Length: 460
Image 1 (cartoon, one colour):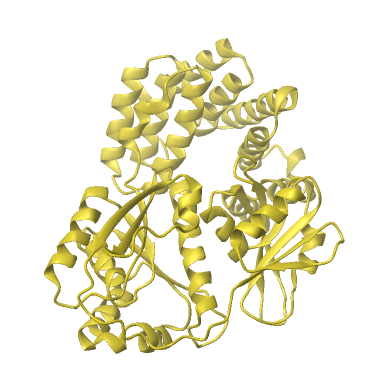
Image 2: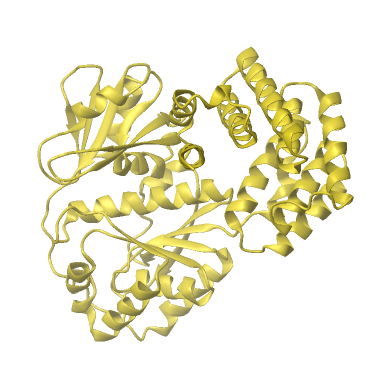
């Protein structure tokens, strides 16, 4: 039982994207020498993850090792899961003949009723993959469509299949756009203005129509009175998952950013919060401030981009802005992702309580140099770009002493150690290629979730 739990723990680590940490744990536990089917299947998965991060001969060799581990696992028990993975890994290793021989065996297992897959979805998805590996694209497309019909909201399963099929199609030199019709609905980050009367039907319709045109299945943002609440209601009306990100305790945010605009907004806030898919509170204190609002905004944008990446779908921003103010540039604008803008005429005075005028700070350290503190995300990105080949770390904080120097021990060449808040801020503006969670670190204000981030050189 302990061994099973350990394998599951390592798989959980791998699923977060922490490839190097999962492989280290696998080796430390001695599973690389095991003949157990579950250990061999996980070995194939971890070698595959490592191969995708490698290049050249090392990449091909790791794919070949992954194929071998999967095929040995499949021989222990006539199972389509390790077998289809062995076929795909053989393709990435450059052995197409072996790929097609294994894929034919998979098709025989499924069509013969010997193995129908872990779930009806995975049975059809595995069949689609075998057909794709046999160069039967149209048949694969039909089988994938049937798989999605069997589990229409199994978004993470769909995403795993989409990711795999995109890699297989690209390996064949094909056009991956055939997959677009199977992608989950977009993830929406919404933000905007407060000066909207609770009974302003024109503004309500404009925001609802904009969201209907985007057709998101997921939304991320705050719930201030005005366009935030209207956008969240439009998402709820479509049955979309609502992920709420607030800068402080909900009671204080309600008091500062909702109640001053009237009881109707407060009632709507309460209803949305109670029905939200999840709630993230970014601030370290109970009081909403300018700095905590900025932190929550960065966090929400990064979270939307991260979720879209996990689901293999688009991330889109909705910006609701006063018609007389013009377009506001924010980190999302720098990322190259889609932005939809709605211009609204102000219909109510802004009565939000004044917030403490503090600033969010970004702390950066490169090698063992002095900590540099900046208040603009663009300056933080530039500082990291200047030291991109060194050991570096970044944090963002509302108050207290800099803690970033303690992160430096976790940095690696080419990978910056970052708090999750800083990592999501970098992701929001398109400066990050990949985020790999590595655990928590104690600090004076509580535990800090640490990540390793790979900078996007095109942006940084």
